[in-house]
Length: 100
Image (cartoon, rainbow, N blue to C red; front, side):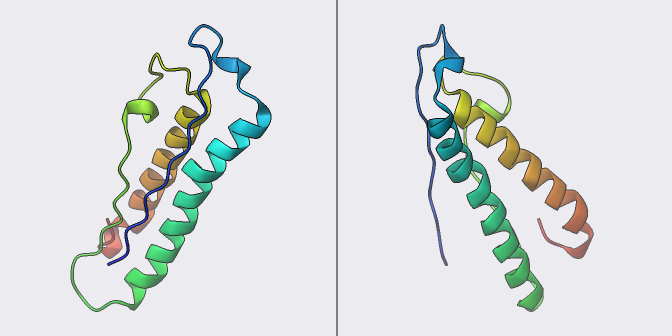
């Protein structure tokens, strides 16, 4: 079993969340979104090669994909929302194949 844990969050003043630099925002998106896409693609390849049995892609997170928290983490929230969208889209597309 391989478990990969990764997250990125650059904090800004809660009153000025858009003060995040583009460089920090890009890092948050790369870690919180691109890594999920890569991991999901690898999981799909593995699921197709496995014999019968449960096939589950599990991504844990926090409430940032549901809405902003008063923490000044606009980049992390955007990344979590994008990751949730990727996973929901994959679930819709591959669910009938038994992939969850």
